[in-house]
Length: 187
Ligand code: SF4
Ligand code: SF4
Image 1: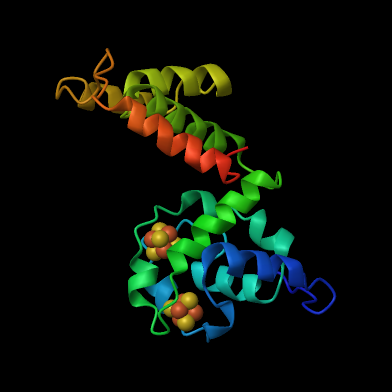
Image 2 (image 1 turned 90 degrees about the vertical axis):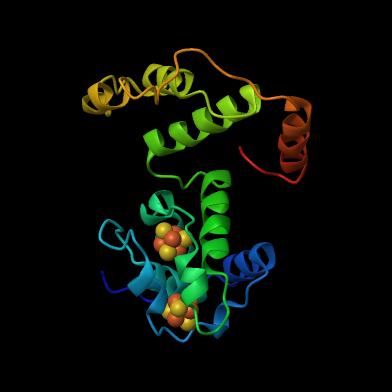
């Protein structure tokens, strides 16, 4: 990682924001590295999760919110389970993603488009409709060949339905989305 001048770019408001929204005390992190050791995506992250914790603690807003790791996190909560200080690290990652989106730092447009398409599908059908999700994602990104090589393996297994199967109680799902939006979610 490049050297950064921590004191010059310390953003106290950012630290406060993350702590308030996540309900976690960042100062409790003493950089043991357990979260990174247990994270299944460390191999693919541009910044490992323990370093994201440190940079967040140090108020390095831009560095954190622009990193690609936020968009690869699977919210598996392994980091949360392994933290010896009881920090809900996955929750911090979640909050950072939300702030990144809201404040226009989300650097990887296709990932953002995928998230939006996924959530729109869940909102409409009550569960994800994969073929519809795929069509929307391709239309918005132009990435026609994305994962096309998987088709011969999943189609014969009936894993990709060509028609949606809406659930009962979609009204309840809509209420969840509305509550989320009322609290400032998605932008
Ligand atoms: S929740 Fe995200 S950061 Fe934490 S271990 Fe899982 S993939 Fe890694
Ligand atoms: S496991 Fe907890 S204390 Fe250790 S580096 Fe990660 S967040 Fe910090």
